[in-house]
Every structure is written in structure tokens, then in C-alpha cells.
View 1 (cartoon, rainbow, N blue to C red):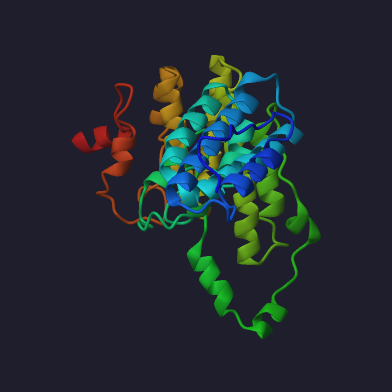
View 2 (tube, rainbow, N blue to C red):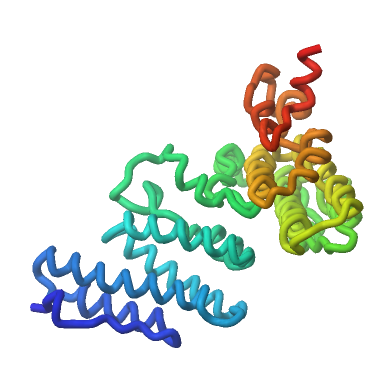
Length: 335
């Protein structure tokens, strides 16, 4: 029988996933490990070392290539899979720290392309039997940073339901959209973001050639995600922005919000909260006060979107109550 005390786990920086899987097979998943106490202790030793290795790979080396990111993400995915079964609590505490370090070090690509898209955040009822609250807001809140939202929050249940109820004949009768609408990759430059965004919307969403609602929705979401990413880069990646830059970013953001109010206000609303919080964190009060607040670029609501009808909803007003500001429409109501 393997004991907890007679092995020292070793995971190299060169082959971390293979080393981790070998350790798990030999000291946790092996039939030779018979008692739960030994199994638990062996797992904790391996998991602790695995997390330390991820920290080293992400934060202690030189710049990370795209290939390195893929390898680290695969390793992290395996660590999370096992954590969901053996010990999600330690993993959850650790992964919050990882997220905060990624954002602090401005490692937005890894955060967005791997942590968020692959749902490598905290374990919860969706992926671990040790939880049962599918309404827990914590998993969703974990991903609401750097302009991102939880992937599972973006699932449109109504669209899925409609898809499942469509008959075969209806599918066959649906007009085939232009190829470019199906295969395009939205490209928005840092130099001319508003013009690029408007062109993408005209060609891939508002074009008369695209009549299928599901395709319009899919195209819009791709463009909106790219636009939100560009706003984030323009605001936060360079480190400082000029007054004229602020006005250009605000114009782009205004157009993004206008379209969001019509096509998908919910994703925009989640994202703009992250923008506000980052502005506050970086003490970018000028942009917050002169553009977000004065131009009402906060969440979509009944005042500007037909998706909502509660004109008494307090949340839009509360959104602006930061940095010594208040909602412009709150002042109107006081007159």
C-alpha cells in the first residue's frame, strides 16, 4: 500500500501535465491506495505542487508564447477536473488569486482566451458534485473582469429552445446566408475602431442579404465581443490616454451601447459594470465623469431599450453612484 509519507511529488516545468498525470495515477488513482486518508493526503501533496508549478509557469518566467499558454491551460484544465472531484475548496481559493495576478500583470490574452473561454475558474454545481446551488452568483461574478462575462451566462436558452422545436422542413426552407456572413472574423483596429465597427455591422448584421435571425444574432455577438475587447485595450492597456483619445473611445462606446440596446443589452450590461470597476480601480475619474456618466454609457434599461419596461428600476441609477457622481436622469427627476 502506498503511504502519504514515502513519496515526494515532482513536476517539471518542461512536461508538467505528463508529470502530474503520472503522479495522480500512481499515488491517487492506483488500486494500491486503499484507505481514504492516504488518498486524500497524496492528492493534496500533488495538487499543491501542481498549483505552485502553474504559478511559476505563468508569473515567474519570461514572456509566454501562444503555445506556452495552450500548454499551461491544458495543465490547468486537468488540475481543475481533479479538484472538482477531490478538493474544490482549495482550488477555488487559489484560482481567485491567479485571476487577480493575471489582471494585475495585464495578462489579458491568457485570462480571456483560456481562463474565461475554457471556464477554468472556480468549481461549482455545474461541474462538481460537492455543490448543488445552480443559482450561486459567485461563479458568474468570478469571470466579470477585464470586460469578460462567464461563458455559461451567454447561453441563450430561448434560442436553444427555438432551435430544438424547428421542424426539418423549416430548416430546409431557411435561406442560406452569404458565405462571408458565416465565416468572417471581425477585425477592429486600434487606429479606426469606430469606422471598423460600423463597417462590420453594416456588412454582417444590418445587410439585406442576411435574413436569418440566428445568424444575425451570432454575427452581432462576434462583432460586439471584438468591439468590447478593443474598448478595453484602448482604455487600459496603454496606461494613459489623452483628452482627444477619451472622446474617440466614448464615441465608439456610445455606438456599441446603441446597438446593444437593440440586439443584446444583457451582455453589454454585465460588461460595462466591469469597465466601471476598472475605471474606479485605476482612478480614471475624468473619463468616468465626463463620458460614462454625462453621456449615460452605463447599462441599457427601460429608458433606452425595448427589452426592459421598468422605469422605476433602481439599478441603472445605482450604476452611476461612484466617483462622486450620480445618474444624469436622477437629476432630471429631481427638478
